[in-house]
Length: 317
Image 1 (cartoon, rainbow, N blue to C red):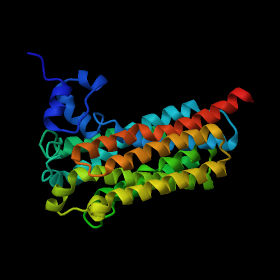
Image 2 (cartoon, rainbow, N blue to C red):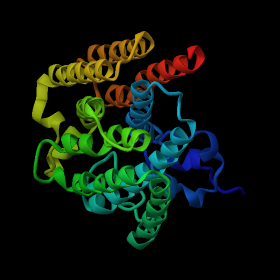
Image 3 (cartoon, one colour):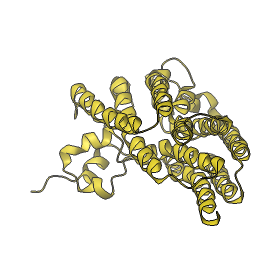
Image 4 (cartoon, rainbow, N blue to C red):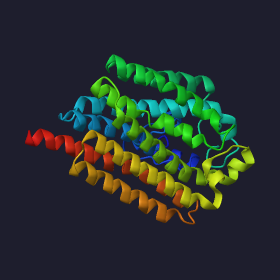
């Protein structure tokens, strides 16, 4: 009899897994490592990648130059690798807590399908891939990238001490807004910092939505989140963070001298955020997960507008 596919195994063990494409065709003994790296949940690396792509394209607009395809590919590889590394590290730190939460007790470490030693080796492999990408950048970008390890390392511990772990996740997940600009220009400027602020606010918003799934279990496990902190005012709170997201992004675009195409991308992004806020009212766990996942592609609306703006420069120069 053929071994179970990833699709069947993942759905049985993790209710929020989305096995598809290549992952569906892999042997079942690869499943725990695919799940450790969250490859079966692509929204994570998409959310990590979007600020980087937006930053690279914003720098192209700022410098009036054509799109940098090689950098875009490098940051894609880096986003997948570092998302996987961050998730693996987070699961190593949280394996005891994850065992107390219904949604996460089937993860590879708390379920015993991967040993801590095996997960550590897998973590090292992913970090080496990320290091390869980092060393392919200029010296200043390498320095900026190394500093990203500070919020990445701190984040898994924040839920034990503060109701704002989503803020630390924002600092970590948004770092590409700085790294992308640094990789393209060899320095940092005001538009990059405003884009970073925009991404932080966006991350707090969408991860608050994500945390709606775990409110009951988080209380039982003694961990904190903004979803618990905001309580019945969660829709208003997420709306305010999304408002800050759009305002800061607009400032970044104006400072970079972005034109109509880039602003159309921002408008599409803003409309999507408004749609999320409207749907968040009375959302249960299933709807919260759906809304969170929608952000995986939503961030690319802004990136697409900025990419189109830089491509337009190439076509009309």
